[in-house]
Image (cartoon, rainbow, N blue to C red; front, top):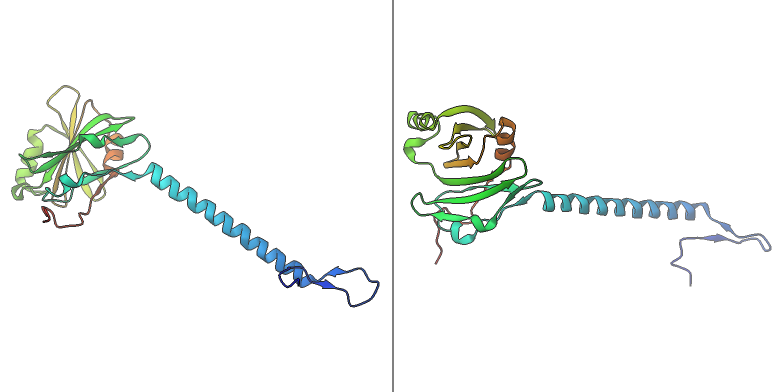
Length: 204
């Protein structure tokens, strides 16, 4: 039986050379096109997924730290030229906060400190403005709907960037002065990590 073949043969006249029926050619071409399109989609999907996984990998905060936080922290989406040293994640008992280190190919080594925003330091409050001024405010940048304040650090040439957003106070300290574009790129890589349990949940 040749029921599975895609080519139909016309041979209704003795001695006549068999011909490929036109509909068989169209049917074969249609299936070939479908296979090519499916293969193309499969390849493109693999490339896109691979790119996202390799170049935009979220940093992983240890569960032992997440369980102790009373806020949802900002973490870095690792990408080309920007990585997080996973071993540097630390819990700070004095501020009930978190500290970790970022390595940037253009900005060098950066230390990130985070804590829940004290009520008296809400963004826009006079107390928060006083804090930024006391840190020697230099300029501001806008990113993801939040204002980032660039201040002069305690040492020559280093800076501290401060973001006060969604109940989280974020400090990023550099080892040398960065450009506004470098700070913009760094803070654009931050996203707020949504905890699976309420902040401060310690489980059983």
